[in-house]
Image 1 (tube, rainbow, N blue to C red):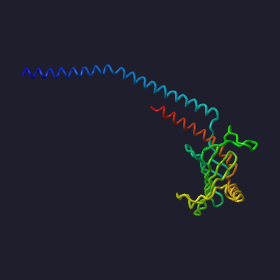
Image 2 (spheres, rainbow, N blue to C red):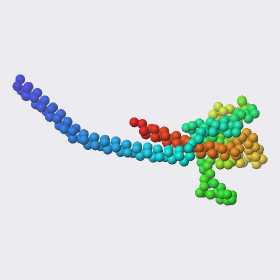
Image 3 (cartoon, helix red, strand yellow):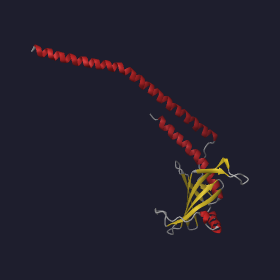
Image 4 (cartoon, rainbow, N blue to C red):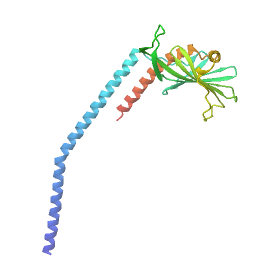
Length: 232
């Protein structure tokens, strides 16, 4: 019986000793862990604080340099859908028995601007590019689709083809490049678009509109980023 008590006491003593040793190790390590966590939190707050400061400054600068105006909702006979938060806008109108829809990208490219004398392009000045997809439909009669470029003061047709309807997903034969067509046919197709309001005046309007949209979307993007970082 005495031997059993001695064995139990020895086991209990070893267990308590092990627990005390483990607790001492924890006490020795904990301050270092707390310090590292504290420093990490401080660095995180400083890093995020710097980002927020830069975002606030940039937003304020953009708003003060040119305050955004209400977007235009009509141009000529076209109704304009600015599609906030997207890289496209849509213009729609009717012409006789036709439904015309124009999908327009924001600025999607640039080339060196031509020189005023008509010589070599000036690489120091860039001319921004906008893509237009013009759909002209006549009920069940299919859709004439024209791929166009809008430069700062002119519309350029790139390609055209017929789709059976707007829901067709198969890729149709797109025909030759527009510039390979007969010159007289090219001029007639430009006249065809001109009377439907797709002309150089539209190109000028779109470039002005996209400058405004680009600025507005940039400010909204910065505000969304700022709001995300501010969240706890």
